[in-house]
Image 1 (cartoon, rainbow, N blue to C red):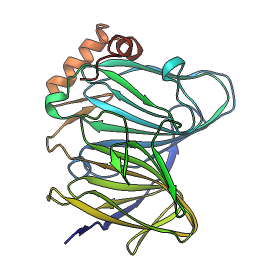
Image 2: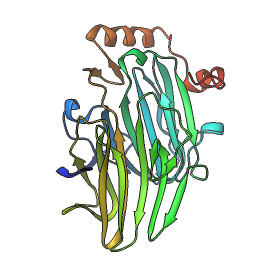
Image 3: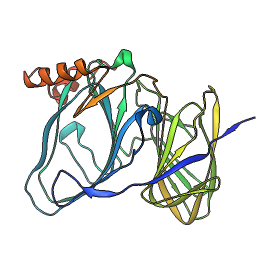
Image 4: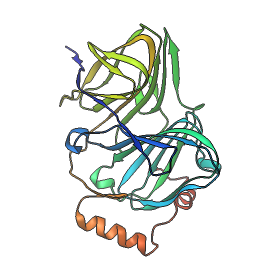
Length: 289
């Protein structure tokens, strides 16, 4: 008998002033303890309506986790690793890097950025960058359902992205009244975040700017996800990943296993021992182990 996933909690994200100035609105998607959200640490829905050419953002460090970024609208970055509408990037901060995000022109942007825990044995892995453009992301369109897969395996699609933590990230659009049935691993922590319209998971409705957390099981088998779009259709993101089961210490831009880790990381950053991620990525471009 298959396991049917159900919604156990629906939370509404609240907009607040972001750190990039008057045009920046941020929504915290994850509003639960890490023990329940493992391996998801934090997810922000950042919207920017920048009306001047004054640069905002800048360089900052990260270590001990991965950033998983999906550009819904707009663009950020330069050169090889520039992100535009529908592009995806995983930055493995690992042992520590400096990351620069500067926006110096008028722009409308919506960016989803997740902090994803690393397995304890991989926490201090050498940093790397992986990019997947919107055009390269595997997709299907049938019977009023469009699915684009950025990470993991879902709906018969397989992303080319390499993962330390098994992670599914799918962008799903459904026309009004359309239903679909899909499978995800029963043991994965999973939630749905609605960008447009409303979606039903069995008899529970998740609306725009709401996150619906699914129940989780210990069985190592597939589970069934029954989805139906409401009367005006929907677009939502599905995040699902294997929990790691190890506690973390979080402070500022760093994740560690102990307070001593955090102190060490701040010291290394102050001493200039963390390289820029673009420099590190260029060195490691042929090595994804």
